[in-house]
Every structure is written in structure tokens, then in C-alpha cells.
Length: 417
Image (tube, rainbow, N blue to C red; front, side, top):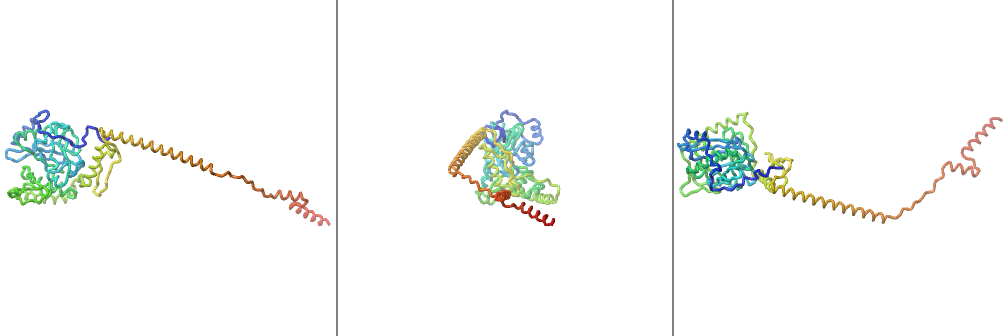
């Protein structure tokens, strides 16, 4: 079977306003002590950062000087899909991008211990026609499109959010990246089909690295823009042309300096021969649609390959030979239906074979009756050599052997005289 009935088919959750953790647990004393030493109030704002390849979720918290610092990091228990963005409902991709979590997105009554909805699809996703719903960070260590943590981890992450909301933060940002966007990693993935998308995310990544403050995120011309301020009365519209805007001169100068250092590091990385090979990534909407079809067939309980299909860079599609269906009520119903249809087909085939045999037998019987009886004719035997000799003797004629004997006798008599 593909999976137990308790496994995720998708991250289907219902978010509610009450976001107090089930057990009301506080953050561990070690974390509270660390926060105090770093100049952080317990209820100060937070930002979360996710790195797929490294399998990390980080919690950054605001210090007394207004800048943020990382206070805790967790190993992601499971995330599904490959590197690259989520394209469509059912593609099993964990999202990448900049998302916002508000109090009503927190769910203490989750089927997966605790969870919160990350806010997919955001304005960028919608402008680019990307679909999906109920994408979570949750417990239970099981994922089909979400970021799944252990129950202990999600309890702490949840407590960070609860305390920040109590302190007055109205929303916190989640930054989800394919990997840490260092010069070396960007060089590794420079030939990936998602590279252009990742370059766009990197601008927001870089600005956070420089300022240590979550960037202001907007969308125009179907792309992200960061830390831009428009003229009075102008607004950003996700699918429309970007309005005239400016950036902070200090941040712009710091960003240009940062980029100069980065460009040099990127060029140096290209010269290295020991850079790790890139990991697999989704190749675009075509592969996403193919996986989504597999997911929908699985949800219907159909018998399908046990793993979703995989598309290679050359367009080759790899499908596992092992087949199965989800172990659930819908899967069992589909199995029973398939078995009933197979039995019906078997009975129909046996009936058709019996009718064909009966028809063939009747045809043979009819042909036998219509065939005329055969007349036996015995041919007259031709006389043999022996018969000819006997006939000649009966008629008083010397046979061929007798003539030879008479000739020999005459020669003897002649020789005597």
C-alpha cells in the first residue's frame, strides 16, 4: 500500500482565531536565558527563515536596537517535493518565497499536533497563476507539501509566535528559500531552470542579511520587489507595471557594496572544482502538472506507481514499476470496485468463449452432414513378370528362361559332332 490511512494526503487544516498552544507550555529556560543575554524581550517580534537543502527552520527575534538575530534553529523533520517553487495544487511542492502569518492562521486544534498556515498563495503566486491551499508548518513529522516538524519543535515555534502576537506584532514573515543563497550555492545552481526565480528571491535574502530587518515585500509586474517606497497615491499592483519608487539611500549603498563583494565571490566559486553537485529541482509547470495528476489519482484511490513520476533534465519521465493504492476508505472502495469489474469481465469472457465453442461445434456438425459419401474404387492389378511367365507356360510357349536352356543344349550337341 502507498501509505497508512493516517498519513497526509495534503495539508488540510482549518485555521482559527484562538492560537494558544494546547498544553500552554512556555519556551525552555535555556532559550529564555539566551534571549535575555542577546537583548531580546520575550514578546518581541519574530521572523522565520526556511532553507530546504539544509533542512533548517530558523527563528529570528528583534533585539532592543531594532535589528533581528537568530535565537533558535530546528532541523526540519520532513518537507516534500524538490527544490523550486510550488506551481499547482497537488504537485507536492513545499513553497518558496516570502509569506505572512497572522493570528487567525494559527491552529491549536491541528490533526498534526499544532500548525500554522504560511499564507500560500501570496500575491506573487496568484499573479503568476499558481494554485494550492492550506500549506502549513506543523507537527507529526509527515508532509505532502508542507514543512513538518516534530511535536516538540512545533511547540516551541508556536510559543515564539504566541508571545510575539501577545507583544503586539500583528503578523510575522516567513522567508522560504531553496538553500542558503551564498555565492557558492548560487554558482552551483546557475544552470537550474529555477535560477531566475531564485535570483529574484536573493534580492530579499540579501537585504535581510545586510539590514537584519525583515524586508518590506511588494509585487508588481508579477515579480517581487523589496524595500521600495512609491510616490504619494501610487500603489503596487501584482500584475501591473511597477510604479515609480525609491529605496533608502543608506540601504541602497549598503546593498551595492554587498553585491560587489558577492560578485567577486561568485566568480571565484565558478573556478572551484570541488563544489558539491546540485540537488534535484522541479523542472517547471509541466512536471508539476504531471505530479499533480498522480496526486489526484492517488486521492481517488486508484492503483498507481507508489512514487510520483520524476522528470529528468532531458525530458525523460521516470516511473517506478511497483504499483499500489492508498490505504484508506476511498482506496478500499476503489479496490473493491476494480475487483468487481475484473470478475464481471472474467465471467463475460468465459461466456463469450463458451458461445464461440458451441458455435464452432454446430458448424462442424453441419459440415459433416452436408459432405457426400465417398465411393471406394479398387483398381485392376497390372500383371507381374511372374504372372506373364505362368501364362506363357500355360499356353505351351517357352518362357524367357526356357529359350536360354534350349540354345545351350544345341551348342553342346554341335560340339559333340
